[in-house]
Image (cartoon, rainbow, N blue to C red; front, side, top):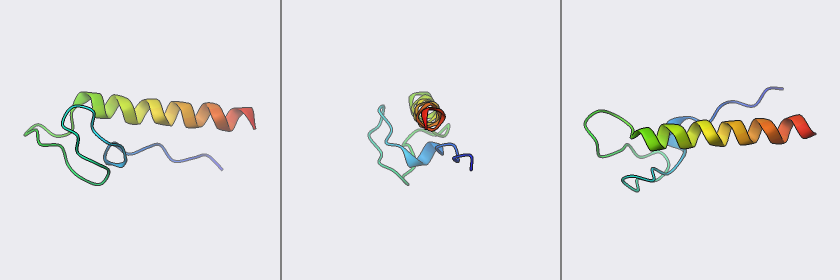
Length: 52
């Protein structure tokens, strides 16, 4: 089974500090750092799965 990617609102935003399931305080949507963090968590999870 392939793990689902992290969704952007499942991680805490390093820019505004909003926790999981909370939206960023920016009018343009989630901060870029939050998007990148979700991508990195997905990458790390997939690396862990490939070792198994």
